[in-house]
Image (cartoon, rainbow, N blue to C red; front, side, top):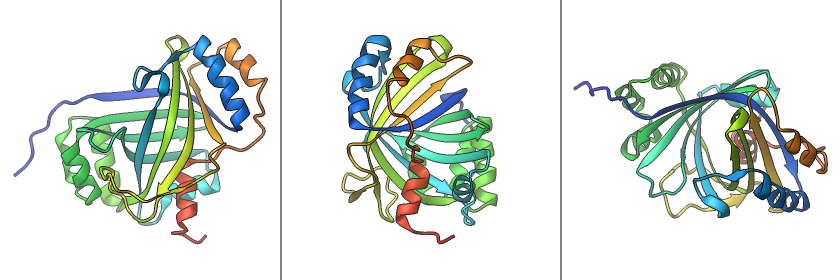
Length: 240
């Protein structure tokens, strides 16, 4: 029986994104400065929150290879929760083109999230949105499947001007060959040194001068890791 389509929460965000890998010293400096300059994300508040994601890729590993080879246009398909007991799941399609990011998020049910992990992508057709339909077509024709589960701790700051968002992610960890987004009993392994932090800055049109001045006081020479790429390299599933 065909499932009835329902309108559900859909979010689309387009902006520029830059990333850096910073030291513990610079992390502490930025935490103190950003607490005075920006507003902590309402989700999680001052103490931040945990993010857990499962990434999907095609049977030919198209998205992984695009990332590894540094092509200017890339995409990611993932599901995200902030606690394994969450009843709502963010199903997200991220597309990057020459430094600009478009992220489209479809909120789906926990039950449908479990079906996606089993490879039943028809549940996406129950959602009346272009992103759900596009993802269904892509994931069925290119034979997508879960390939990576990661988790990290995030501090986030926002400002309403220029759609500004600054995040600092640390304690990046991954799980070997288990993609149960809702499990309480995952055996995580460290993906990068605990003293390192991934700094991401997203904005539209213009980056605040005050933020530029803060960044000028930090060591931004180290190349930032990709959470998706790092986890898949560590798993050593592919040998190219």
